[in-house]
Image 1 (cartoon, rainbow, N blue to C red):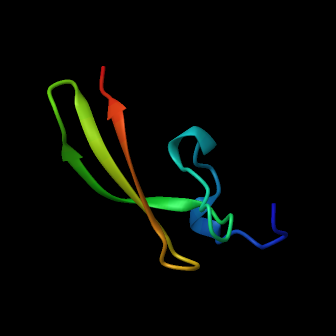
Image 2: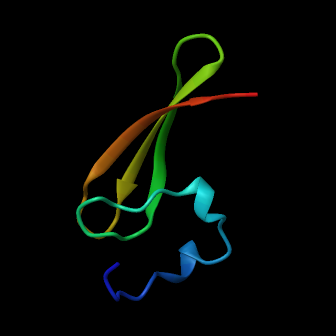
Length: 61
């Protein structure tokens, strides 16, 4: 992992809620949440350091 300082707004958040950027390894933020197929959400995360995005489908309970 890169040795970068993490902006203060990331502190106190559970790491399981935020993936790390595959490009620069910085914590990503949830930028979009939308329904997918029944029982699932499509979550799009954005990296504030390098502008990369990542979308994942997550089961909702």
